[in-house]
Length: 263
Ligand SMILES: Nc1ncnc2c1ncn2[C@@H]1O[C@H](COP(=O)(O)OP(=O)(O)OC[C@H]2O[C@H](OP(=O)(O)O)[C@H](O)[C@@H]2O)[C@@H](O)[C@H]1O
Image 1 (cartoon, rainbow, N blue to C red):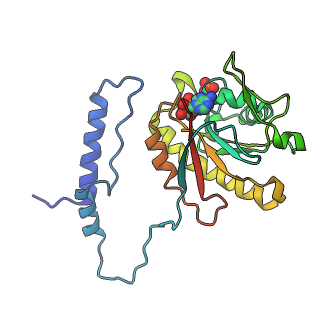
Image 2 (image 1 turned 135 degrees about the vertical axis):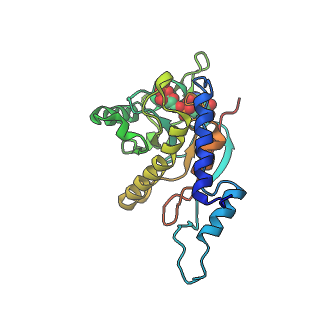
Image 3 (image 1 turned 180 degrees about the horizontal axis):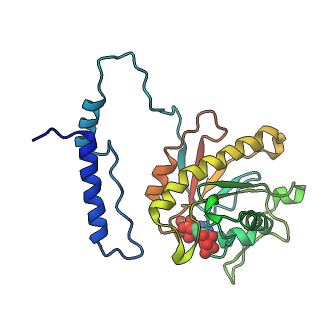
């Protein structure tokens, strides 16, 4: 029998995965089987090493191994009870809708940010081109009052409202991880594929913003909810794994904090 090569091994594995996925009567919530990566198992890795090994040790490595990847800390509590200049990140659809889940809370607390997000979606004719991008929204320039404004939750309705008409001086970060929402949302695999590029794009915008902003207007701490894990129906552990591979070498933001609600 001819020895297995990496190519034949991967082809066989992927054909099997495709067949399995075609036969399965996947419900709408089931994730499509992931295609096999050339180095995803000990067997494939061994073949890969054999095929790529060379006597010429002077060859430079072609893969980029970032020295620093994004760190994720965890906290429990209210993501919105944040100091001024905090960047609050959530996942968005590309249709201009913040009408459910944490997006609705963003809508209530930061109506001017919602207007900018909706305008951004509206002016982009091909909504799908937004997938995998980010949008940094800076709150209107602060006054002393808005710097100290604390957002409150109504005891009777549970709906969060900004203190008075003043929006807290927070940045809002949108990650466009799915083109649509509801039943038409993208698959978990597509959402995960879009998450890394969207976060990178947002971090690039933060760097650009900070380069010209005065000290009192720079992005401070960065908070994120367990994006994609609610209405978008993707396991948080998978999203987290994607975020943790992001290269932050040379970036302004090295770490973010994921906030989980205190039930
Ligand atoms: N008030 C609140 N305070 C604190 N944490 C809250 C919260 N409400 C929910 N969470 C948590 O926040 C995480 C993300 O859960 P979400 O379901 O929100 O978002 P997602 O990222 O899966 O999906 C995005 C789509 O949801 C929206 O809906 P619409 O399109 O408007 O219909 C968007 O616009 C997108 O399209 C989960 O850990 C929830 O426990």
